[in-house]
Image (spheres, rainbow, N blue to C red):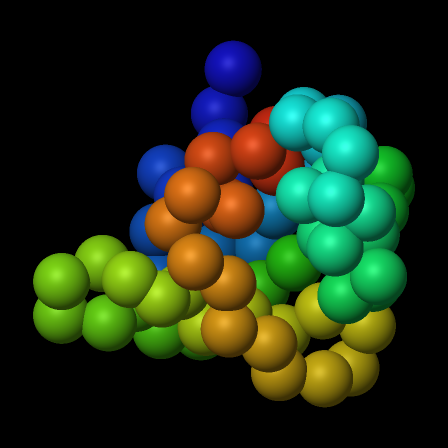
Length: 73
């Protein structure tokens, strides 16, 4: 299982499954990250948190703990 946290800069990944539950999963879905959507990894902060991505045509910053709950292919 590969997560968004493990994706490299410049890589485009497709969401396979969202893990987690309750408010965390709802927050991720509210940001537009759902099954089947493509995510492009733009930048990663020097210490690895946050990760800047492009999803559905807009830029978004995601924390490492949120990125661990997004399974990608």
